Length: 172
Length: 172
Image 1 (cartoon, each protein chain N blue to C red):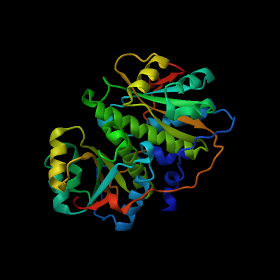
Image 2: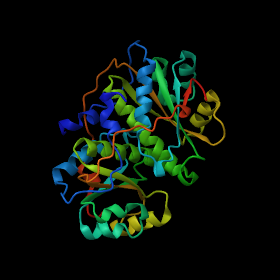
Image 3: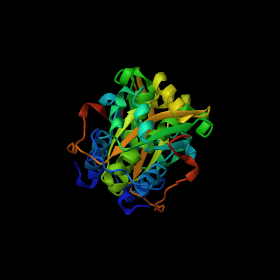
Image 4: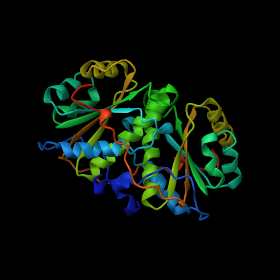
């Protein structure tokens, strides 16, 4: 693992957090990083919902079995795409663009000392309906994923899951 | 822009490259970074095709109007998902997982001094068919995007496209 790329290998899913809150300035840093991602034809179809209210964080766990750590997390960001703003109004671009922004948030979180965990929402109908209801999403706004955030109470080791079998040269 | 996040703001689409080739070790660094991305239930449905043959790079430009810089680029990586390996065999997860890996490649490229450009393939039928044919992709292997790579002959300034209108607090 090239030490110049440590900022990538150090990012691991962190599901346990201390009680320390995440301040406004840090959340804005993460969103500046998110919106530095590339998007198809620079359409930037993303939207970000910052969540720090305890009641809302708890409510999200009712329909997101993968998001139980939100009961303990001090903050979360939910990423939703606007299908009207996506290139060609195509869901594929919306998902790709929002995912690039999410990955930037995860790496930025790691770089500023936060732990984070990607919480899948799309394409699970029950999770999408729950997120839609909790945040009162308008029509055409598609929830993609959430990100749990907090100062880490666990420290997984840097790693890659590199597998030579997934690498092809010049052709399949 | 928080200087700790410079590694994110410095990544810009670079479409002009010098003649310097990209060596094997550097390409492997990028793939180690790619496979350090998170994926839904750690299914890692991604595959990577390394392309350095001039004839193949040129051939790709015949059906990818957005990829004309490949005529000059010394290398490219094409990222394809295996639908059978995707969580629940769902295309949405395949796209999200491959996009996180692609974003890691772009940031890793920047960190090692390379320029890069995300080249959309999915969901354009003619581009998908072209990629499929050039690389002889088996059934169930879905081309997502390509990445042009080379040492930069242009140096766009670091930036974010942060827009306050895309930020929502606690609810939409």
